[in-house]
Amino acid sequence: MEGVIDALTRDLLTRHAGFDWTVTEFVRVVDTRLPPRVFYKHCPELTQPPVATPSGIPVHLQLLGSDPAALAANARQALSLGAVSIDLNFGCPAKLVNRHDGGASLLRQPERVYQAVKAVHDALEGEIPVTAKIRLGFANRRLAVACAQATEAGGAAQLVVHARTRDEGYRPPAHWEWIGKIRRQVSIPVVANGDIWTLEDYWKARTLSGCSDVMLGRSALADPWLAPRIRHWLQTGERLPESSWAMRANVLKEYAALQRQQLPDRVVVSLVKQWLAQMRQGSGEAEQNFQRVKRLTELDQLLDSLIVDEQHAAPA
Image: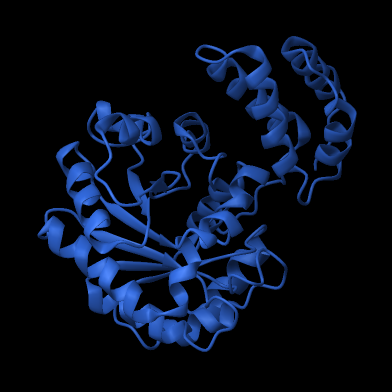
């Protein structure tokens, strides 16, 4: 979720009950301890404890790297700044990240996953929890269980599993049944992730994986009310209406209003289009609006265009 889940996005997505916790974009760790400003940039919530969104939803700080000593030093740095949890990213499929020995590249050697988790766990001395996220493997699923067991052996308190290999990227389908195989081989809580776009997907992912919890990534951007709809359904058995284009457009306008307080309009235009592009998944109206506004360069013109369409919005 690099480049799309900043503090303002976390704020907007957690204003309605649905999420139990959130995770920052990854802090890239190479071979040195990073200065505090890097952590504050990725997780400005650190400056105002408790480390949470304005709605009170905890924010966990994520590290991505492969050098155990550097990861440990940066975990200690994050702890000193007030971090409430450290999440380790072994799932990023980006080619650039993998070429530089980060993210899913470590899944080819479970021992390296273990050493990374153990170094961070030992450095934190139990003061805050360590969690991890993996995929089902790099090129294949042969080491999926071994990598999961490596995170547990290293001291991870929880594991999120994206139900595809790195080479599968984000191509459907997600193999939720494989998360079930992993869950049965570890004793720590396992959270299912990948291709959960609807209530039906949510229930199928839970059923096939056996997990009681799921993580939403791209789908939370595509439909900011998916998590609240899931929560409402679990609590009441009632299915809320699908999110309308008017609801989605209003989120984009709120987002733009927050971003333009600190960024030039030209940058905000790109960010709004980026989020709108994510909303295209499963929404014909979002797709139509994206095609209509994608060449607009003036922020107010873009936002006015969204407002015009709101008057005629129908369920997505």
